[in-house]
Length: 278
Image (cartoon, rainbow, N blue to C red; front, side):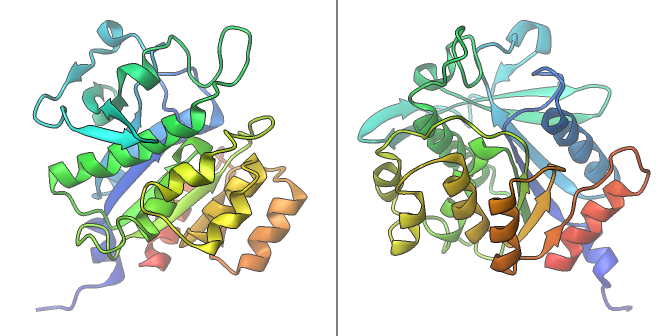
């Protein structure tokens, strides 16, 4: 019998995509389009994938044919000492033959908006919504008894995921050997998250001086914390802030530079990057 090659291992790779947004459920953007394209492309390359996003209240469930997965729903997650019910919904993108899991909760995702209100003001509880989203994804993956090889996070809203994986869930057999990939976009939020952000993360079983970098929870500081917890970083923004670019360089993390989506080989470069981390 021939030994397994790296290519054969990759063809059986299990990739968990944790996405802030995906088209067609939200308007097309660089991020939402890439999340859809990557999910489809990697599945077509023979990899097993699971893709998650929040079920924002502006997503039309009837039009997009979302339905609740009763066997996965019903768990309560405690965020900042308050119970919040975890609801899992699912839908398929027929043209891509890709299934999308949605993390839902009436407290955090019933509002008919994504991250801002009608006046464009950022929701004060976006930090808790992000914590709930990340925790909800991991608890759902555990219920599925599915062991990912790669977890690829898209958007700052998925930024809690790498921290969870390297701490709270680090000893879980399903996640112990996973490699975390983070994509950096042009998705900065103004000002800072709630001042109690670090305390809320600590309440999730994450403790250590490494959290001090996010004591002032600005976008840049959050991304530095995320970079620190990634095994590999992909730059999706052609104009990455110089301070973040320098921080990323100094981190010594494996980096895939910006990929021109007009080329035919960019998806192969994502796959090669995954391979190099395994």
